Image (cartoon, rainbow, N blue to C red; front, side, top):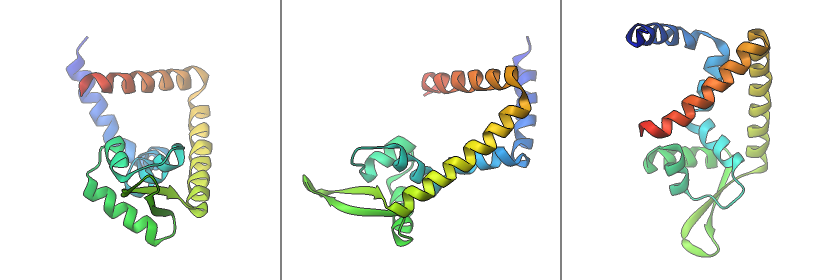
Length: 141
């Protein structure tokens, strides 16, 4: 098998992916403010900016800028940690939680339509391959 040629084909296909609406939507969920909102909505414990930075692999400066903007728009709150005043706890506000929930539901509906269009076998194969790529990512670090 010529993996070089397959890689060339895949890169060519991926260059067309941003033209596919669902691919754009999924991609946007993995960037900037949306990424932070999604991360915060998926955590139950106290979240510190440094934890967000580490989990999302973004610089602390980038996280600080994102959090400042989210706080300005009433999407998050930042409060001193009651156990350690040197730490700041970040939480979604009710508005932030509602926003995260609405975005997730919209994305799930769009993704379900895409998977349905692929058909059962291809949809299951797509999910299986995505899971495998995520596992392999840990090997490449």
